[in-house]
Structure formats: structure tokens, C-alpha cells
Length: 417
Ligand SMILES: [Zn+2]
Image (cartoon, rainbow, N blue to C red; front, side, top):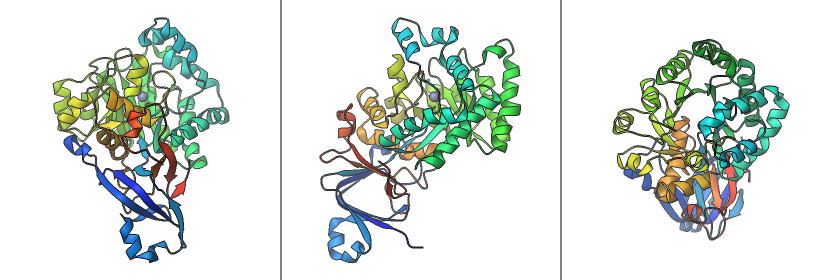
């Protein structure tokens, strides 16, 4: 096969985590920094990385390549956004204004807003229109440097509507140059018609939605919103166990607004990731350390809802492999920007930029079981990376927190932004 070859020259610095496993604790800050470097891409993957002097000694590397000059620019791995709800109908700006007027997130949900409002709207939208809503949002995610994302359902809450969201998520991966993993989040909220019959809805999720999503090849994972007013730890375990029965590993929305028990429920069922973690106890940390479940932090949601932030420093200092993601969704985190999430991680959570990069790349890839192929700039991996704007570098991203440092985005060896 005649693979196209691209040669990036004069890269000021390549900054990247290394390896194909989640990186924990103090090692999160130990990224590789390669000055004055080149990257050779063959087809979709990175074939060689080295110092510029090597090109002078071995000029044959230039042969049959398309040159990309990167003077004064840095290269970072593209972001892996392991937690989004990117497929939804219209935004929820009116609810946003309600919140400014003083209603809490829980009160808005009780008034029939929130997730239930999104679900009612989404059930009325046909698949084509839903895709039209989602595509530009996913392009926004890409322009912010993400080349791998996870998309959850959860704004349908009926079998048909949940499958519709997952089908749209799958179709986006065929229409755009992006890698997408999908998660069935039927247990996002109890629909109005099941408020007096919780077990009835749980049975629908466990015995109908999960097998249907698996039969149609629509879901890679299953997720549950474990929180007071949503699903209990026991119900969370029930759904995660049903997922495992059909071959879907779990993810959990855990401990966002209280010590909900979601972290322990997720660990008990071998979940890949427990996400949010605004409320974390010593027992939760001990259980995470004894498990392979990754703690994923979504600080943009805490920012948008003016809620307490997750204790990132405590988790990293305890030796855990923290993950960062956007939680992009219309109700609590309407941002597609991993750079903004990194900024919050540095400014508010007191993570070092190097730790934030590790959390936003290789650790996110590990949470989606893709760390063999994504999450770092290394020989053999897919050529998914960001070329920063001239004069900018890793630390610029969180520092100029509202100015994009992203110059170009490559995915599988081709420029996509
Ligand atoms: Zn979420």
C-alpha cells in the first residue's frame, strides 16, 4: 500500500505523556519534553520522532514527504474527551436564566426542567434534525483539539429515543474525522410516567434498553446517574450488573452533589470510570486506590453550576490517575473546550499544566480503553495531535484561559482543523 508520508519539521517542543496505561499520582507531571524535533507520519500513524539534527544526518527521511514547517510551534497529543452528552436538541438557555433568578439545579429538575425537559424535546425531534443539531457541536469539539470523544445517550429516556441518540452518535463518527465511543445512559433520570414505579423503569433499562443497544451494536458502555433524586447506589449496581451481563462495562455519574455512594457502587461493579467526584471521602479514595476504576473530574460542570469543585490535589497526591473531561451538555456544562477544562484544572483545582495534559489525553484514552492507539505522541500510535499557534506552548493553554492556543489539529495523520 502506498501510504502518504508527512514530515513535521522544526517543532519547538513536543510535550507528551508516555505509554499506553493510565498515569497516576506524581508521575502525572512527568511528561516527555522533546526540544527542536521532527515527527514523521506514515499513513495514519506516527512512524518516527527525533531531534532535528537527525534529519541533517539522515536527509533520506525527507524523501516522498509532504512538509509541514512548525517553527516556533509546539506539538501536544490531541485531547481525549471521555465524557460528553454531545447529542441533544436545542440548548437550555431559558433554564440558565431561571437559575440566575435563583432556582437550584434540583428545583429546576423538580419543576419538570432539566434532563426531563431535554428528554421531552428530544423525543419529538427526528433523527436527521437531531444529527443537524449535533454535527456543528462535534466540529466545535474538534476545533478545540479533541479527536476522540465519548458520547452518552440519556436525553431520550424511552427505548426509541435512547436508540435514536446512540444511532446519531454512531453516524457522526462516519460523517466526521473523529473517533467516538458511545455510552447508553438510559438511567439518567426517572421519566415522569415512571415516578411511582421506579423498578418498572429500571426493568425497562436493564431488560430492554441494554439488550437492544447491544443487539444493534449501538453502545460501547453503560452509565448511571447515581445521585439523590436520581438513582440510588443499589439501583446503580443493578444497571451496571445488567450491562456486564450483556458485555457492556460501566461508567458512573458519581458524587456530584452529595456523598451519593456512586463511587463505591461503580467500583463494586468494575466500572471503567467514576465521574464528577465533587464529594469524596477517605474511604472512597482508599477504594479507588485498590481498584482499576479511574476518577474522572468535570470541573466545567462545577464552574457552570457554582458548586464545590472536586478535590483533584487530594486525589493525585494520594496516587490516583485523574482524568479530565468536558461533560459537554446543555444543562450543566455547555462547553466543548478541553483547553478551558485544563484552565479550570490549573487555576481552581491546582493541577500543574503537565498533570492537566496527562489527565486530558492518555488518562482519558485509558478510560475509553484506547490508550494503545491514542493519548500520546509516540511512534506507533495514531498521528492525533495539536500544533499550537506560533509562540505558544503547553503552559499558554491554561494561562491565556480564554484565548485559543490551538493552531492545527491532526487526526489519523490528516489535518482536520
Ligand atoms: Zn455527564
